[in-house]
Image 1 (cartoon, rainbow, N blue to C red):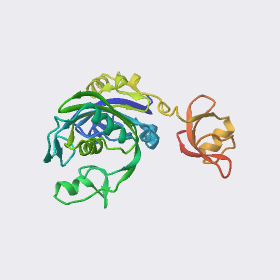
Image 2 (spheres, one colour):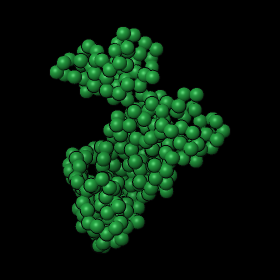
Image 3 (cartoon, one colour):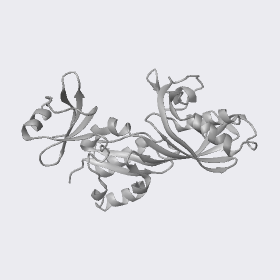
Image 4 (cartoon, one colour):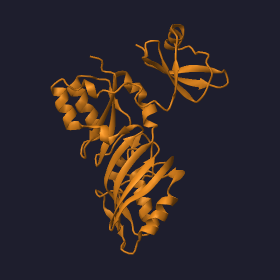
Length: 293
């Protein structure tokens, strides 16, 4: 059976993303498995697992916009920006109204530099920042450009807010909630977090990890495997002739009209052959990632 494709898995609270990958490697006896974007142990929701040649898609799928739902608790700020950290300051949130929340959320949309939490997996001098934080060392990960497309209040129930955020790759929702608490003047931390979508992959269409493990045990899981191009519809599609396929597979560019930064290229049989990158200076499509065996 072909083992090239994408699994849209619902990760429960508890395991790390790496632990989920390790479990699937053992169950499927397949070495080439990765994921397209880490979920913290305290977070649940969509985790895209990439099998076989789909591991080459990681950078493209990680670039897709993410949607989260989050429970933000007002009145306290913590070291980790979630409920596992130590409380560093407290303030009364009961004077805050919905209007103030809507105003703060509106100010937090757009593109800006975000400071990742000290308790994060961002590398500092070759080590995750949380390694330094847990040993008592003060380290600030470098800020990064992120974009928040939408930040909405779903439910106002003091001292908790139910929020939904759609954001770019690399955005830390914990940092957004912490910043919201600063803007409201009362502190805030994440009580729970669920990733509800990665691009077109939704939580409603995901398979719970426990059910996937059961289906693997019964050898009845293959219908869950999505094709390689399942998340690439935002790219231009190009159909190649036999000679063009041969050129691309051997790393040579092809001459086609250019429109966009990247394109997905298909062979005469309809199979995905490669991701091509447009070279505007030469007017050529150059193979960037090749999937043909």
